[in-house]
Image (tube, rainbow, N blue to C red; front, side, top):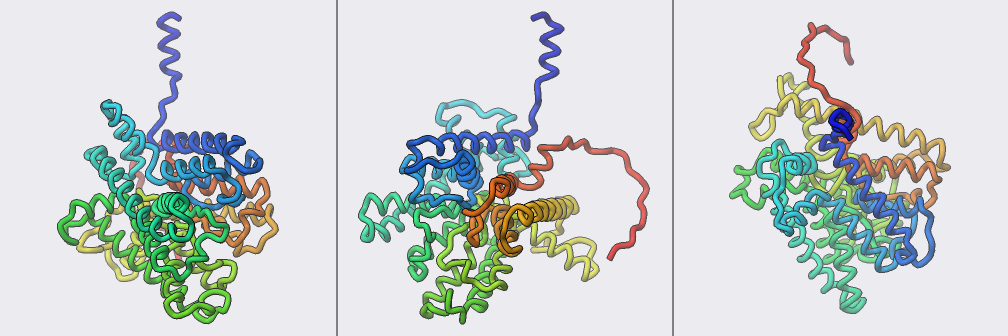
Length: 447
């Protein structure tokens, strides 16, 4: 090959941006997981290729929606594959890649640092490796402590080995907000169990507030020294948990199929858990099919908001919702910019939040529209399924196991977009070229 041909080949090499590399990386992980789950050693009975890839997509995107029962369909090998996909999808394959590179004693270059910055939604490459190290230590430590508590709870019931394995499986699934359970009825048998409710609930909350927040809490001396992002995430998360718990408690209090049949303490635990789990967790201790429609609408609202940025959860994110809400309040009150905790929110952040809101709404609309054509199901059931997939929540009203081929493909795409994020998907498909041209402004009538 002469020099001219070599230069031509170099020019033809595709240069991938960090968003494109992330999108392709997770896509490749889904393909690999699907192939492994289709192996005879992974299942007790054969499943279709589509079900294998659906399960892989659901596990990788830490969603929890499943077309087959996890506990009875998959062998120990298959369940371990699902656990690995959940862990990698939750903390990010780049974080695990950093762990492998550090173990081998290799250096991490600028390209890898840029990719990590994109994966963790950071504003600069400075300190990203230190952040990844801290994230890995926190993840394995928190999951390890949870395993101990859950093993102690389930050992008397199932024996040590099975109790230990159940503790590992549900700790990883809960922290990564996946919602996978080895019981066909999720955690409904433990509706009033304080240990299961507290451990699983805390794992969901901690895994959903975001790794930068956990890192900030590690180093901060007091609340004032926390970053603005951390302050918003903590207050927003607390407000949404209280809102969800109170709404479920009030709306379902007299429903004989849900809270109405429970004792006083069990009512509280059920409301508390159902107030947390829509924040992309996917576990449930009461049957959502028995809930009233107003409660389901509240659940859809919570699933749509989702968890925190750079967390194991999906949705438009808590900070995105709060930024939009503050912008509306600022406009109504006549303020030029949204203000919170004595800080002004930049216009670029507002533009990004609005873009996420519009793109996510468009994605949900298209998915619901297609499923209303292909699936024989009520509108609320379809909307619930789509928002659950977008928020990588995993809750369902029973539609998942009855989806058509097109329906499964649509939900897989929505789950994938929910994990990667609307903007990452958009940036990976477009070529962003900042324009230096400024046009004269014009007035438009709105409202």
